[in-house]
Length: 76
Image (cartoon, rainbow, N blue to C red):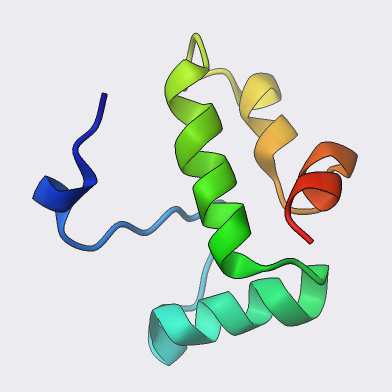
């Protein structure tokens, strides 16, 4: 299990992401564009991803993108 306190700041990024607005700007995009609670989405990812058998399988990881039905149902 990953100890998040040892990591400091954690950023999960898919594809190209403009970080000029910082993490608060990225959270605002998640909230506005996908109508998700950024905190719930991050908790969802941190809970689910460690249980994923392979983190190199793009198809498996695509299930965690913010526009999927499962994420939408869990993170609003």
